[in-house]
Length: 246
Image 1 (cartoon, rainbow, N blue to C red):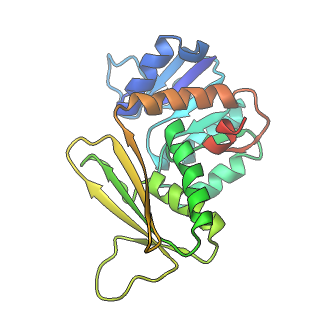
Image 2: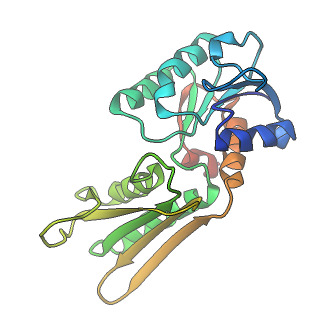
């Protein structure tokens, strides 16, 4: 499986490049692409500069990249794994539109552990329909978006079983907690890779579900596994839930 890595010189791009060059999931490197590439980086600054063949693209660049990434992938018939977060509604629409033509895989978090956490959280939210639910996410100080895409993914999973609920990010000011809100608090501390904690309290008991990422390697492993999953799929929009349910 020949892989184009978009955003190859970023922290996650470097991790994925290592795995691909080691042949993880029988992969090989088709090209490294990064808009910040300099002479000597062995990377293209644009996908359009690459003239070879590839089986899949893994994108760990920036959410705005979908506007150029997806037309390229469609023109060349290449499935795409999108691992960026913070997409605008317009960018989300671009992904859904592209998924009618090529396979698109998107997850706010490429961790299989987080996929398991999401499933457990949905189950708990359904079992305790009147419980208060709060999400606390912690990341490194250089993370740009808050709350994290993973925290929003967890909250939206809860909303699937609690359709009347809504998300409240960064509570402040005067006022009681609404019974239908899902609170999200974002912490930014030093070099924390990523932590997500979901607290479910009924008044008589509290259930805490938590995932901690100790190394960025786990996200790289998940992204390459997603590439292997999607490379031979029919056009459509796929998530990590589709992968773990196979």
